Image 1 (cartoon, rainbow, N blue to C red):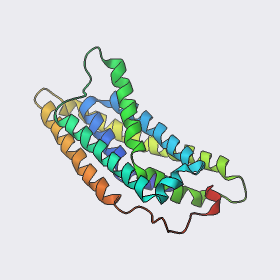
Image 2 (image 1 turned 180 degrees about the vertical axis):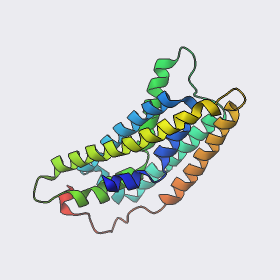
Image 3 (image 1 turned 90 degrees about the vertical axis):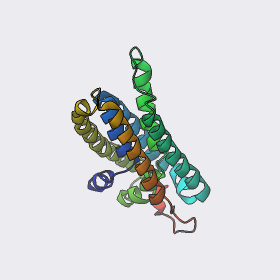
Length: 209
């Protein structure tokens, strides 16, 4: 749990998107996106438990495709925010709720570093003395809980600033400032994911699978 806490406290796509969304659209939108991120983390953990995530980290092509999809998605969100597209409109509450959840889910699924964590780090805490699958699922649940705590904290803090940054005179400047921040995060994400695991690297411990 301490390991997950330290990793999740490091800025990344999920954190940047949740902060930007909450500052722009409010705390409820952020909470719905947190649910999407948590669901995505659970899916990645489940994929790792059955060995699918390892395929991603060992395939340069798959890693590169997912990496650029994530970068492109962040840039698209930045473009959308800059032009004021995608905000919550009156009478559009139900589609907005679904959109926030789906975008949180998508932002997480397009982050190959999440899969890397579950393939490389999580197995270090799995005991070879007992079946790996139940342990992996339990550790995944714990990691999702810790990550969600961090994300909920970010959304709550950003929600406090929302009312001061979205007044009539500040809304456009805030929205465009957040769009620029997402572009910076996309550039950082591109740099930090530029070197995937080598396909010839030594395999993780046998207990992973």
